[in-house]
Structures are given as C-alpha cells and as structure tokens.
Length: 230
Image 1 (cartoon, rainbow, N blue to C red):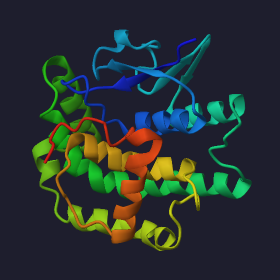
Image 2 (cartoon, rainbow, N blue to C red; image 1 turned 30 degrees about the horizontal axis):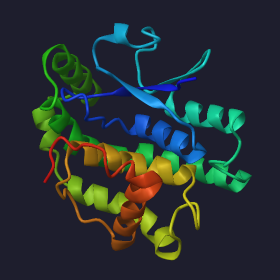
Image 3 (cartoon, helix red, strand yellow; image 1 turned 90 degrees about the vertical axis):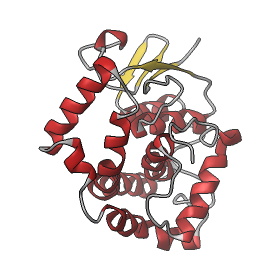
Image 4 (tube, one colour; image 1 turned 135 degrees about the horizontal axis):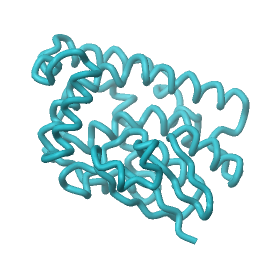
C-alpha cells in the first residue's frame, strides 16, 4: 500500500515550502511510515483528490482521505499509536499551545517576508491566483506587504519564546522531538524552502535546535530544495 501526501509546490515542482505539509511529513517520518509526495499547484484544484477542499496537505492512506495537517497528525496517532507524537496529556496541551503561538506570532512575522518572495517563484495561473488571494487576505498589495516595517524584529521577538525551553532541552519535547517540535519547526521550513538567506537574528539555542531538526530522519528536511539558496 502506498501512502500519498499531496504537497504544494512552486514553479519548480521540487520546491515544497508549505509549512502545513511539513507538519504532515514530519508526523509520517516520526511514525516511521513510508509515503510518497505528489506535487499540486495553488490554482488548479482539479489536481487535488478533493477539489472541493482544494487545500494541501491531503493524505491518502488506502481507502482513507485525511485533510489538514493537525487532523492528519491526530489520525496517525490513533491508527499508528507507536511511537507517539505526543505521549501525555501535557504534551498534547503543549502542542496545542505551540500551534496557537505559531499562528498568532511566528506566521504573522514571517508571512510578509516570504509571501512576496513566493509570488516571484510561481508563474501563470498559479501566480495570478496566489497574488489575488494573498492581497485580499492582507488588504494591500504584496509590494506594500513587503515594505511592512519591523518584520525582522517581530520574528526575533517571536522566536525568543523558544529560547528558554531550548536552552535547557534538546527539543521542545525534551530529549526527543515531539509534535510541538514539528509544529514550531514547520514555519522555519517554510522560510528555508523559499530562501536560505538570513532574514533576522536567530537566538543561538533556537539555531542549534534548528540544525538538529534539519538532521532528523537522515536529514530529510536538510535535503529539501530551497528556491533561493544563499
């Protein structure tokens, strides 16, 4: 049986920056489950297994179709309980907090830096769709978004939240990675797949953790292609 994860791609189909797809990929890697990825575009929803849903990731596992990154993680946890992504109720609560922190703090800091870059890395129908939907979301042009002041400082402030736990532990999960690590690391993979340039100053503990995350699972994340390699 082949598991297929539908994964958003840019004009170069090997560049897969979607942070939500990265959460799903790390969940599968954590479970030791073999899977294949299938690149899908932003605009052509007919290429998705569920065109009405029209968003990635979507996991096809036998007769099952699972949508949304954290739903995929929860489904994998039930169907393949070992090794657990979150072993205790405390770790589950921590993952919930991490997701809320990322959504309210880290993504808003990174998005104005990354989304205008992504628009330049896609073309044709995808670019038109991407630009129109993101400008509607921001309520301004992508040029105005890119000119937002204080973005580096916002990212640095957000990442300082991770500095304390990662100064004491190798991972947010303690001695080994857990779902909280994958949720927190996913937006950094969003950045890395778009550009490997330094966009802000990263706390040293977070930078060391990032390197450990890149090396997990035979360097799966480190091997991912970046569109703007430094």
